[in-house]
Image 1 (cartoon, rainbow, N blue to C red):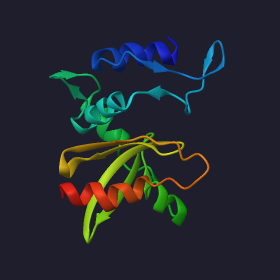
Image 2 (cartoon, helix red, strand yellow; image 1 turned 120 degrees about the horizontal axis):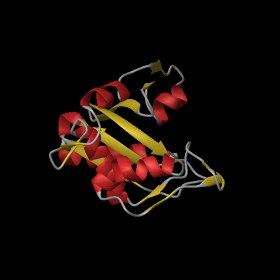
Image 3 (spheres, helix red, strand yellow; image 1 turned 90 degrees about the vertical axis):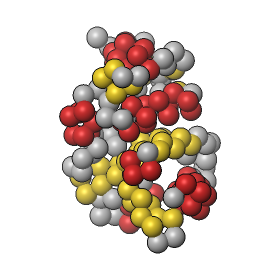
Length: 155
């Protein structure tokens, strides 16, 4: 089964995600490392699925064990740019990050995309934040938006 067919059946269909677009390298090969286009509300559904241990509408879509394994730290990131921009460690396609609102730390796990696309999950706040942007030539302001405006408003 191709990756786009798999994703359409599991988890997109159970989540009600019907509008998406994959970039193809050629007609038979999906560029799976990026360029999946989703609506912000559908990005939030994926974050919410992970926030709730793989459960959506009382149905297990992804096992709790997979969720836990995929957000666990497997790689420590010692480079300051990567830590400041994305996170201090990495799991299975999820960055792990601590952000601060004032002196209060908030642990999160997140998925990022080029230009400011982000799904951030904050278990301690029971919150998913989705940001989209088009900062392809300039620094992404997503960290500032989260730490300066969103976290202080909800923390």
